[in-house]
Length: 185
Length: 137
Image (cartoon, rainbow over all chains, first blue to last red; front, side, top):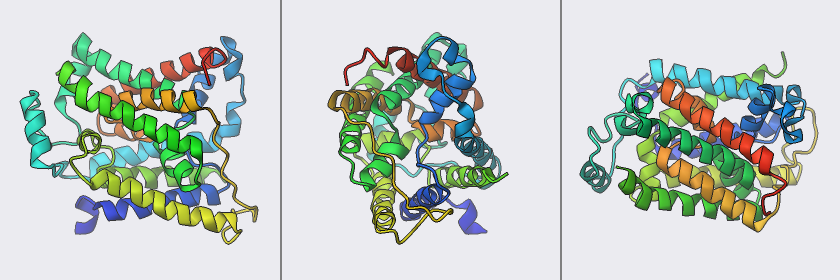
């Protein structure tokens, strides 16, 4: 039981993610997550505005069930499986963030500065999340995939576009963490 | 329903990401500042083991549930779209610490903030759909 409630080390994560990918393909579908943003747009009626979304979302019912599973799994994890959300950070990381004004660094998975009340009680907090979300939705669709589809599926099947996309992920991620986060906070 | 296996797989995948802390904002901050090996170990490990599975798919050693050969869909080609789209995604990922699948998982942890992220992502995907023919490839 201890193993279930303790944080799992990185060397458990890699194999279990690979097994998830294996099962997804074994069940006959292509592993990925970000296409669901388009499917949800189609379900919300985006096809009336643009032909791009005129698709039969029922053909992706398997992916929607996967998404529902992700949500259920998130609730199960949050409520039952993670009594302690402490993240064991490099002291340098913790110090850097503290200097930027982050409080209780690493005490929870998500810092209050971004995921706390400010997300819906201040314009700045709301904008941080809605703009990040926009970049995630727009960027993954423009690039043709996210971490699952490009970094894991695409790189492991040796596809060149995925290597380019992952380089892009890091260009963006480095700009965000090195320059934008200090600018925002 | 035969697709319920995807529901179970989604639950499993969410638990794996949650338990290995691969949904934590801090873990991605660390990754992009190269201050910890954790996420590199997870993603690198996943890629290496998946690459072995891909070889087994390629040579037909593992077939899908219906006995068909498994062929991953070729990714769309395009230098500008992958680099530029990837950079946009990286910016959002770096600030919010969330990539696509974790947004849905985080709903269980931080409901309202994750809903705002999801709303943003849907607006972003919608804008891409509107502009897709005009964007450079």
